[in-house]
Length: 110
Image (cartoon, rainbow, N blue to C red; front, side, top):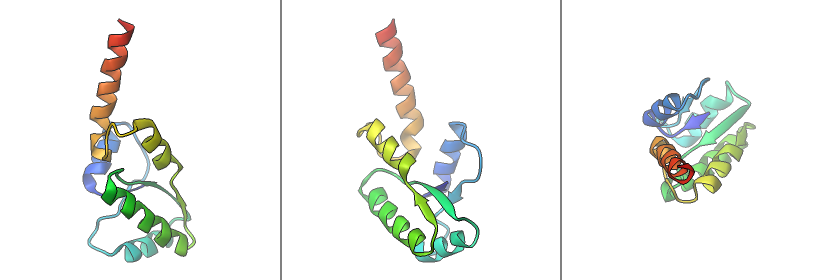
């Protein structure tokens, strides 16, 4: 999985995600970073933020990865964007969003 920064990795670990998580922001250009990823991976899941900057970055990453022959999989990103529907705009906010959903469900059930 490819994320924007270290804090995104920390949040995903807290949420129980296992496996390799690659951080995009390592002081290199998107093209350089994607070229490096292409040397190791054929398929990458993308998880950028859903704010304007994150969506713009998402599109740039998709183009850069696909130009190297890497399958840039954004299904998970699109599904999360659809499900959260503006409830959060960043990966870092996902734990709070999930907590809010649990609280709402508990209130409705109780």
